[in-house]
Image 1 (cartoon, helix red, strand yellow):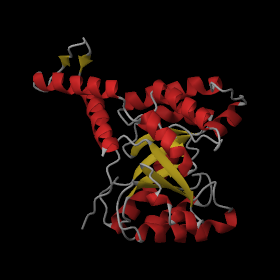
Image 2 (cartoon, one colour; image 1 turned 90 degrees about the vertical axis):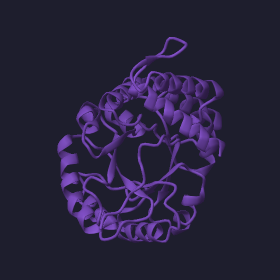
Image 3 (cartoon, one colour; image 1 turned 180 degrees about the vertical axis):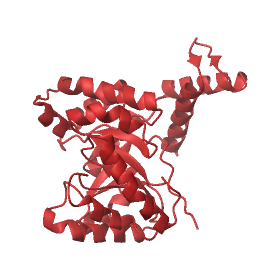
Length: 298
């Protein structure tokens, strides 16, 4: 018997993190209003709390009454001794709403292949189709950035995410308000994701909880650069992030013109009324914008 997992090709505006060992937050995170949830077994959990966190995360997923919002589990670094134990959380039975794994500090295709090999018997045991559990690779180092092209082309990878704080520390840079030090890295991830045909990369968490204007400015920069969606560390960040990533009236109108032009052309390439060249990829993004706008309105 096979089971279906949540679709991962929707445009999601927010990914709200919750520490895997905090039972109170695990009980509230699914109803906090985020488009997606990330249950964290890595940095947010102390070494002596890892086993407890795994049990609490599995219980939280088992007790869900809905498969929405889609949920990822952030496992431990693939160079650690913990990540294989993290996979036990998804063994045996399909868990409601589980879309896949967010993997930190990925630096090579070899790391990803090891994870892929370990996931195959897990999927079989849980009655899942091969490669059903998708992966979000977090790029947090210079080595990871150079490997991003190979990572993005792996069939399991649905997203790249950017880990800004660790990346800055790795390259010895300093962040300013415009995040100039990471502009090359962020632009590279946008181009890499586009070339591989996967979703736009996910923007990093904004660490200053009381700086709403800074969060808005940073999110707007990410969106204009080509990112879509942002990691969030507190529900209070969701309204600003959602507002910045929700399509405006002009974007919706443009997306509608693109889709209509392709439909008039019978599904082949077309040129919209404003002269925009439309192919299948452009139309796919336009339809995603329309779907997101409809969801936001609802």
